[in-house]
Length: 385
Image 1 (cartoon, one colour):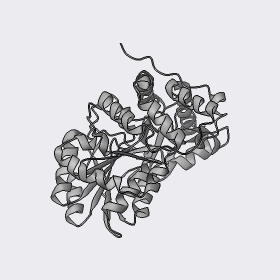
Image 2 (spheres, one colour):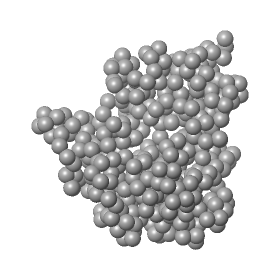
Image 3 (tube, rainbow, N blue to C red):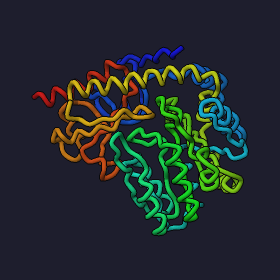
Image 4 (tube, helix red, strand yellow):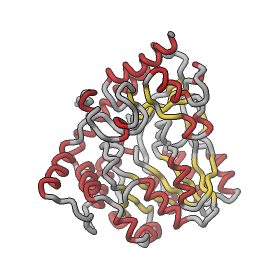
């Protein structure tokens, strides 16, 4: 039996929230920019956090908060991935984990491959680690995007020491195939490089089989690290907790040897929420979320075809973020600025994701169908005028 789609909260209730999505712009702007969702929390998370507040349980995160066991169970149930518990560690958020791993596996000035267009903090994270960004854009295919393995090979042959992978990819929503991940792992192994994979959108695959990088092959496990969290799937960005996984004993030892402060940055409420999210109790909620997101990614395609037929949009394989080319409408390299000012809709700025993002906007469709419809109709009215 298919899951019943989640219903988004009413707009007047959402505007009572104090998070970035609802406080950055005035109330006449519909926000579709930052990756926050408009649904109530999974009940298991709500129960866990309410009980903690009732108890005044707001102290330091314990040495064993249960994140390891919860993630191992979740990976087995949802991905068929058997994770060695001894390879699992935790920190405050995914980018925090990425930068700490990069600090150890690269030397100052080393080059790190990023596959643009990509989540903007990737650029800052590489630099924070003391490394240098080397951009290898995704390859456009007739149906979407894929890793440019030839370009990555050239970068590694030229001395790049690591690849910062986004799997599934943000902003395109691409779920990289197992074959691509295997080939990437072989390249990294051949050149003595490391792959650090941001897999925060992994639980949000829509029918396309998501393969965790470390599970792609033996080579991937030997060269790789993964960093993920329940925060994107369960809307917990403000509760600081992420999971770092080493592909094998050597990587696990490196993670174990990170400064103790890396683990201490984990928030207690973040750990509690991640444990509840990763539990089997939250599986039904996640299935309902996926049904709602599948409905909306298709609705967006219909709305664009009806109201903005010159826009180019491919259904994302995963996540709740749409990567839309609106360059045909002449709103310049950064159309999000024009659309916010003139149509009162806030999309994410395409150029922040790299040169390949000029003329693009990223649209968050984790909202009610009515809000999504109104957002696109506002843009259409601008075109008509």
